[in-house]
Image 1 (cartoon, one colour):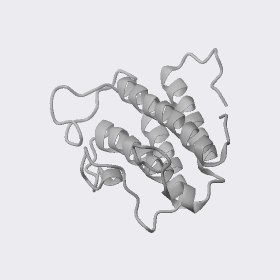
Image 2 (image 1 turned 45 degrees about the horizontal axis):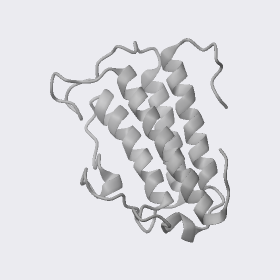
Image 3 (image 1 turned 45 degrees about the vertical axis):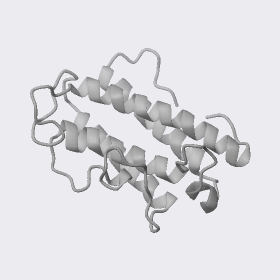
Image 4 (image 1 turned 180 degrees about the vertical axis):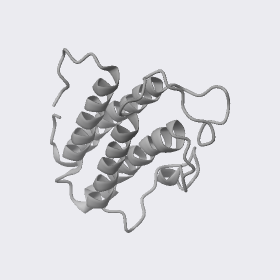
Length: 167
């Protein structure tokens, strides 16, 4: 569901749109066969499960490792710990397990953002160790655009897999 048009609280607007895109991502993936989840029909070669895992780690990198400054194991775990590497999934990764991680990441984001000023600057010591740390508002906007862009990618992948279209 789209956030109400009269919602003026910037952080709540970000959070509601992030929730919406997580739901869209889930709807695009549920119903695909395991084969379709783990194979690609695109020249770039990414699979729907790889994209889902990328979104989980992307939000984790920006909020947990980035904004809160936590030290996290394998911040680039979606790409074999290589920030420029291709997305990867392990044999044991499942749609259900990854969706649970996606929604848990959303709950973490909501808990971190609650009560914060959008102008709060990311903590040093995690992803950002320089004086050029982004604000919470910038981070949330970046994460939102990642979700929106990749939801569009999944639109194409799903249509190619079984013809399903729409949000």
